[in-house]
Image (cartoon, rainbow, N blue to C red; front, side, top):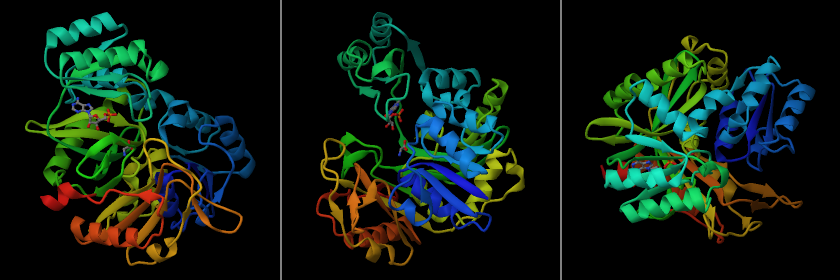
Length: 424
Ligand code: AMP
Ligand code: GLY
């Protein structure tokens, strides 16, 4: 089978690496891919958001299955276009991707089907929003409705902070059109975790739980990033909690989406708050997490191509997943300055030494090679150094040993990835 992976980050490297192991694969392409993905796929010079370019390549190259990594092309309708060509595609339709693309739509769906989440209200003008904040008179979270590249969420501890957040989103248009509408919701407390389920339109099966580290510095300090590291499984999501998440959140969501005429296919990524009264949805994403995908794929023992294809074709009843019982942990190495300004083009050495270590895989997120075969940084988040271990603590030690084998003075990482699980 000829397969195309859309995207060029660490998540897509992990998907490509996993799919490349399938005996069913004859040829793997990536659009646009990166220098790490190039080791297992032919990289096409087509951007992940160039829908016309991707559809033309699918036709010209005789691609038989498309796997979409990032949310933007899904929200823009890439899966609908591939589907219309009669080719299976992993990832939801534009209508179903709204679960991530519109926070208001997502919250209305949860309310309609009784799925636990923070209390909320939607607004399309600032005065009514401020009146709601004044009456509520407790900490709230103000969210731009649309896609804002992981930003667009402002946690407000006081009324004045919440007013300022409304102004920032609706009047100063800090997130552009994404903030034309907003959601204001109750501030949840508890432990955050991510849960991933595969969906085929009518059914869902659990994949894995994981925990991410969004802030840039150790101890969860500093500005938010796309994610500085992750591990799986997450001890807070034990078997009993996983069952509750499937019964109370994932299954009703998939059934609700089908009833709404927007059957959900692909991976459902639930960002959860695990509080005293159980799991509540913070957000849904219509794609794998990055970096959560890297440790999850490292633990998958089943054929990844078969698994993703079964979800795309509505055949999840035909597969049973096998997992490595060990834990996996990914440390993200980023360019100095990230998530603010950073330099591109600095040289990274020692990658082969790190990759050669037992149970270590270095996934590339933002890399390219120069004409002399040197590996260069080409983004903010650059590498996802991933290791398996008998415990999260063991995986953490192995991952940092591999980090220490990499010679990249212009890069940095957090030193405490996995602290919640290790400290438990
Ligand atoms: P989101 O982009 O929706 O994932 O929000 C970013 C981060 O804001 C989440 O990972 C949470 O840490 C935090 N957050 C969002 N909504 C809430 C909420 N209702 N209560 C507490 N924290 C929240
Ligand atoms: N790591 C969080 C995300 O992919 O949204």
